[in-house]
Length: 269
Image 1 (cartoon, rainbow, N blue to C red):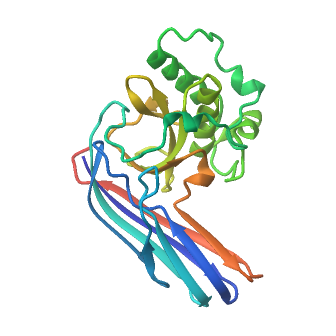
Image 2 (cartoon, rainbow, N blue to C red; image 1 turned 30 degrees about the vertical axis):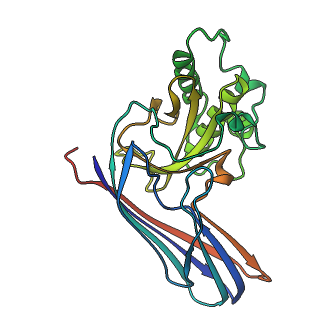
């Protein structure tokens, strides 16, 4: 499938920003599951400086700006060809050992309610068990926009019973790690025709299964990922995979952000 992505984020500040540093993780992953036909990333202010790929294969860009007074607009336009490999990620350019993703974070650490989602703890078949984790997490909370934020932990989300794709992913990652499966949070885009997409980025999880490798699970949609997903970045949790991070120095004003996203297919639906 050929998918076109047009992503724009605008930042408006109420006063002059003495110094702004932004880090962009916007370039789609290059792997056997998806081929990046083209990708253009630009910023209205500052010069994009490409950093060497990190250990997980992310292509990172940095922007350094002094005395910013105008709106900062960052855009990414990309055309990606995707393939459905039933969730199995192939050809990832990374050198990190999977066991590094056994470590819990404050956003993924499971509480008793999360651990109790799986009643039968006998892992006869790893593939079947991971699918059961995905189903259990899918049924654990109700998708409700606006009920959580980027600081909401997996434990907080399951206690309130609602959340968004980020929360489903944190719960699944934490639960998988608790049962000895390396798991990580994935950020990207989804070609979707349901209300869950909400014209925003999407999140899911990857679980490492022996003899298969990393497998993408989307608890929000209760399925493995397919050719409608465009993978961008992965990490321990959301805080490691944000597409745009910024640090302001000596700034006391306010910041306002807006997003505009279009994900469209060139293939018949």
